[in-house]
Structures are given as C-alpha cells and as structure tokens.
Length: 223
Image (cartoon, rainbow, N blue to C red; front, side):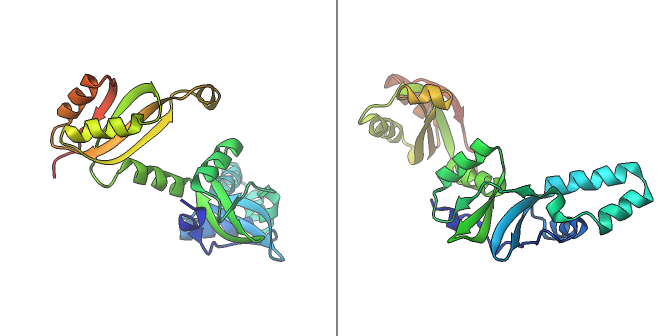
C-alpha cells in the first residue's frame, strides 16, 4: 500500500504571513486538521488545528479586547507553525508512514513528490487503513491466537484448520507480541484471523484441537 493512494490530495496551503485567524477559519470550514505552509514552492512548516485552537483559546481566556484584536489582526501562521516538519514521500509505503508518525509522535504528515507538497496523510487515513485490515465494514468474525513461534508453513496450517471448521478466511496477519525491541529478538507473534463463519465456537474448537490457544474471539452480528 502506497501513500499516494491513501493521502488527501490537493491540500490547501498557506504562507507564513497569513493571519492565524485565517487558518482558524479554514480549519473550521474545511474540517481539516493540518495545513502545509508553503512559500516559493517550498515547504516551510505545518500548522495544525490543535495548535491554532490553543492559540485562540489563550486569547479568548483573557477576555481582553486588545488580546483578541492582536490575535485576529497581528498573529501570523509563521508565529506558531511547526518548522521543518516530518514528511513522507508519496511513493513510500503506508507501513513506513506509520513508523514515521510513531517515531515523531505526530498525526499529520505533509506528502512530498519531487520537492513539492502533493498531499497530507493524517491519523484519519491511518485509522481508515486499520479499519480496512480489520474488516470494520464487512461484519467479519475473528479470533486472535496467543503468541506462537512462526515457522515456515505455520500460517498455512492455521488457515487450513480454520477453513476445515467451515469458515471462509478473509485475512490473516501476525502482530508483534511485545514491543519492537523484544519482537526483534524472536519470531513469536500473535496471529489475528478474520473470517466469515456461522459458528465461531467450531473454529475455536478446531484451533484448540490443533494446538493453538485462542485468547479472544468476535462473532459478527447477524445480518
């Protein structure tokens, strides 16, 4: 999965000299969470909805007319923007995007292509990606297996076991059992399986009989 296929395209951009009140208006009207700051075709910074609202609330708390006028007519985007923000390339993978967001502790990343800002990727798209993986809109049932040592053929045996119990497997993926450092030291992973089945209990019983411990299970609601 490539970032350019998930990003918000044609993002609204501002210059550093734009008034912060203008940014606040755009955030409200466009219902977006970040605006790249671009000057002379180059990315100079990023202003977020949260940062803008914090500045606005600070002015409103004082109830001072001079403070409110200063916020409305003097404070500029460049005064509170994040300079040199973390970015992602349009041709990077979504996996790399998630890593960058986690490493920098940010939920919005300008997307670059040959030095130009071509999009924004945010926590919204990341949540959407997770929802697709988990089949949030497809009413799938599912189980999670306790950490196991993944060896060649293990995933295939799990799929065969689930389908032999009458289920239709739609997705299977391993996740780290611990933090990244611990996970890198071994091959133990939890395994999440999403499927359609009339009887999840039968799937659980089949997995247990094959030696796999089910630590959680979800039965999709009937249509």
